[in-house]
Length: 192
Length: 262
Image 1 (cartoon, chains in turn orange, red):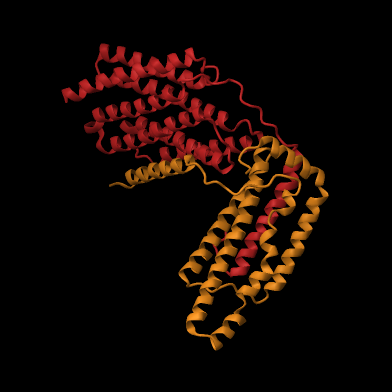
Image 2 (tube, chains in turn purple, orange; image 1 turned 90 degrees about the vertical axis):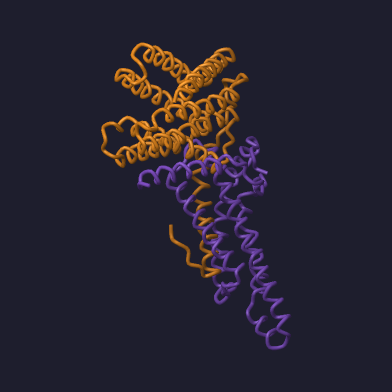
């Protein structure tokens, strides 16, 4: 078979697969609660739980257990830690998807969109999906290390400060947020 | 061979009958007001069928003049199809002004890139110049429709059932035409009779999808979308992207994972 023949056949199969995927009814997504507080709340929940996650995943606990308890118990705890890590990962993904969805709704309802912003969001979405899937696979296969927690507290506080700044700035635009919320409510398409 | 020719004639008659039924539906249900380019395309198809019937009857199926008229009319019909596809794109996205401004540029770019590549990549054989150009156009049409539907899915735009059915009909026919022309390129004259037959079958399938979609009247006026003031996007979009970057960064730092930088 010539190269061009295979090329066109593969291309058509790819187009048909993409067509099928584009027409598929999307899974019911987690809704965005519509209201002025929406913008202030998105992206926050998982940060709130970071200290608990940190506690749950602390290596000192596992070392202590390994020295005192049976191997079976240590294995069980390790398994539980992995489960917690996966749940946390899902929470981060949920936050990310909620923000993405909000951004898309705003773009659809805007009379003008910026190409650079839209492409950046697409790039970030693909990058995030790749990263999270990689982590998930590593955790599920048990080949990856559990989160490295050294220096995490600094990272968390730095993150919190930046988030706070962003939220404050958005809070200052309360009027805009209210207007946005009422527009989203008027549209009422797939927001919940 | 005789049986194939007879079957081809029957199929041609069926195609024309379904085409006429669709044209009548478009007129009777007044759907030509909503889809003028699509209606023009369907009527052009019928005119092509009549013209080819007269040509084959007068000069024979294998004459040079029949070959010329076939490719000439096909060129016109494909251009009309491209217009009808543009109309579908407009129907699906033009209500959302900002996203539409972005989408039509991307769709046009996709069409241009695919068309240029397929023509440049083709073998330099004069006998295949027209099938090659035809394949390039069909591939562009299929690509545009797939990108359009991906775009609609990405932005959660729910197009109405008719628009989706029209898009599916065009895309399936174009995909099939690309494959059919690719096989023709390899087998040349041995495949020409079957090529024609399969092309008619694929078109009949698309006609059936469109007829079923357009059996009811469509409302001309689309519900008006209430857009946000332009300041909101400028204020919120960079903020959201900033937060997405933070989440992305947090994920990679927390798990110390190396992902390909895009």
